[in-house]
Image (cartoon, rainbow, N blue to C red):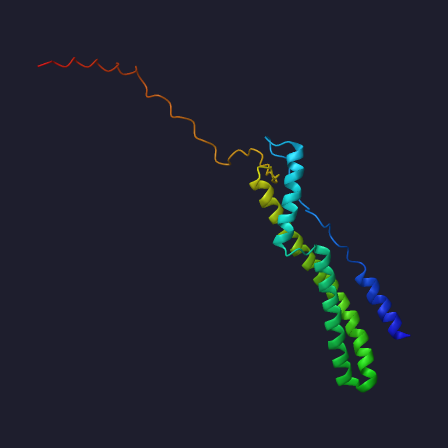
Length: 176
């Protein structure tokens, strides 16, 4: 009975991870000199390019592979530890605990694997679309005008008395 409860709990926890989308998760806008049909053609070509950059694997595949490997390793380590500590009956309990622990660790590892692969895909997609003349929106930074805490000193007042006379005109040069 304990085995079924542990397996059910592991399956429930592993099912909480949601796979990311299979395409780009970034926005790209058509270039100013590009038609929408050209944008769609380039989008398809760049999705293929980005997929080749990550070896044709999707983020969902990376998540699944990572979760299965973590659960399998956790089961093996748990069974070995249970066998060493408790004999024959301990191996089954250790395997169950290892499966549960491996599934928990696998959920975190699978999310990290999927995120990393999705990021690499997005970078390849954006590079391709930018190279084809499309626009990549960037986060702007708004910095409101702030007056400096140091106030600029006003110019000094003119010296007292009448102003000096204007400079004398230069004498013409002699030809010679």
